[in-house]
Image 1 (cartoon, one colour):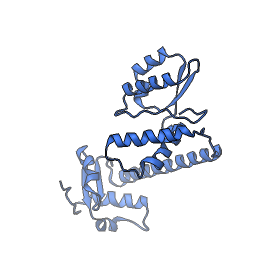
Image 2 (spheres, rainbow, N blue to C red; image 1 turned 45 degrees about the vertical axis):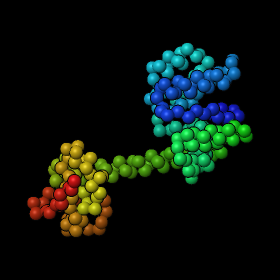
Image 3 (cartoon, rainbow, N blue to C red; image 1 turned 180 degrees about the vertical axis):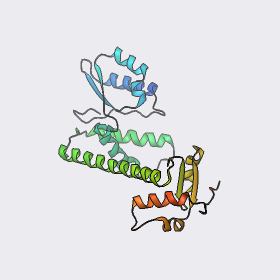
Image 4 (cartoon, helix red, strand yellow; image 1 turned 90 degrees about the vertical axis):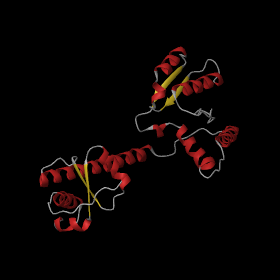
Length: 227
């Protein structure tokens, strides 16, 4: 995407390796007028940093790559175009073949480039920063919950909570098989057998303590993991 006028150069390719990326760079190189510099904004996808790509970049001095921070590819203006393409062309489209899909994307590109508009930020940067801070707070809360669960399990039972995994009976088997295959001892037990070990009012800490204590009882009845 040319951020100055909003036009988009697009190519449909079967794969996204460094070979296809170089082909795309060559296509852009042919379309950008000589004498103009190219400031390319990219995410951190591995093919974008492949040694062959770096050698291509060294042979084209008018190009400069700028990589968005990790998990921040949304900063790239082209992501807004991808969102519009998905919503207006792909989301409810019916495509009977890959060729039909490519044709629809190409038609959308042609229509877009016939009446291009440059992308403009309209959101207050302070609101974006505030949203990022709320996201960090949510992640910190999740990490705090995990730390509390591990701490409660170690205090009550004295074992590494990663060595023994006890799950509610309704947990789907497809969700726990990878845990079992990784070498963990997975046990199912009914919530009704855990309730007697939960003290006072229900909360996450008391649930964790009750599960950890119930799991170590010699009389606890477990359900085997089915194949």
